[in-house]
Length: 407
Image 1: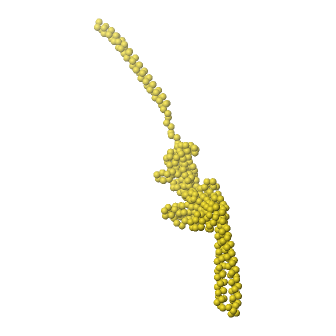
Image 2 (image 1 turned 90 degrees about the vertical axis):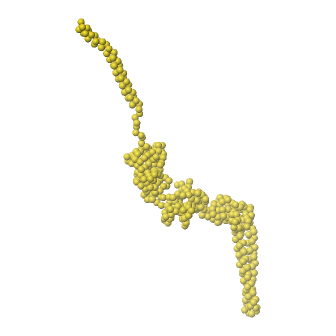
Image 3 (image 1 turned 90 degrees about the horizontal axis):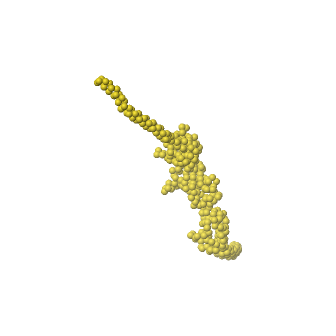
């Protein structure tokens, strides 16, 4: 009996255990399914996120503008400010008094030497000349008569017909008459000169200024401080005076002695935009206050562009550099260690080359250093480039748009 119950219990126990384990296995499967689904969703989200993130690209090369270094002879000039100076300036004044009748020119006219400018009333001086000539004629007749008497007295004296005293008296009278005639002739000359002064002519070629005393006025007695009638200024040729520093005096004198010292004046409207003339004067003294020396050059001024007192820009050719390496001025940069140039090599990298500037004419620089003719030098975009950096040579517009700077 007991054995039978035990067997029955053994048969029932597995079925009860199976009944209890079945719900547990089903929950486990759902948990596993959920875990797998979560992993799939996470993997999908990670993949989508990676697709949405942009791929980082390498930065573009900096665009620069370049020019080729060249080799040629360079003219070294020094730029300064000059002043136009007239070689001659004359104040025309009256040398006799009288009424001013006419002015035979217009203010601002170009006049020639000897040309009539003013006419003073000549009538009083014509009368004075006539009076002097009349006096000369009268005294000349007296002298002639006394000379005849002297000749007769000499004959009588030889015959002892008159005393020696009478002969000496007549000789003295003739000499006195001769002196009077000489004085009369001087009076005639003076009257003729004064009459000539009534015609006032130009003493030089030049340009007239304003008329200070108009016709109709009576000119006062001539004096040292008398007001001039007009001022005439010579303007053809004309001089340009300028100063250069004394530290270049050796070059200046060398060029001057070889007749190669030239002055170039920038002039709008002139052929080539400037006029050139040789320097014909170097001062004999250096200014102690400014440390400069004065130079002058004569310009033909055929078109009358230069006016006395005018300020002009002057370039003086002081030396020559043969076979210099020349680059655009924009290619030369200033750094903490001095001037340098960025040279683009065959590998497309810009390398810094230290240089020494021998001459700067405002557009191009003559340099000395590691730059060779034919090297590509950076002229635009330097601030965006460091030595050894790869660059892209861009057209002029692109380089100006991205660079447009100069260190």
